[in-house]
Length: 129
Image (tube, rainbow, N blue to C red):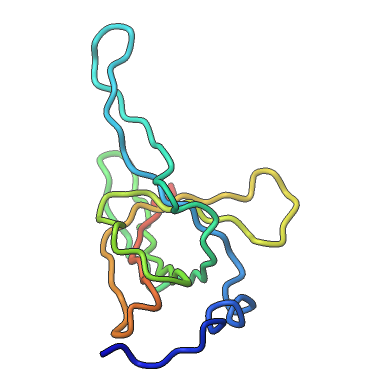
C-alpha cells in the first residue's frame, strides 16, 4: 500500500531545488576512421529535472604527472527516476541564471531512492585539475 501524498506536494517543494539537471547516457559510435567514439545523448524524459546539489567530500589523488583533487557531490532530484544508472552523466545548471556557460557535468557513481520513491539521489564525481 502506498502512503498518502498530496498530488501537488512536489510542486510546492520547487524552491528547495535551485538547479536543473539533465541526464545523459553514453552512446558508442564510430568516427570516420572506424575508431570507437563516445558521444552523450539526453535520456528520454530526463531533461530539466528540478535538483539540489551539495558537495559531500573531496580527496587528493596522485596522477601520473600531477596531483589533482576528486570532488564528490550529492545531487537530489525532485522525483523518482528508476532508469538512471551508474556511468551516466548529470549536467547541472542554475535554474534562474541567464548565463550561457553555467553548466557543470558530473559522472554518476551511485543511485539511491528514498523509501517512498519520491526522490532520487545521485552520488557523483567531477574531476578538476
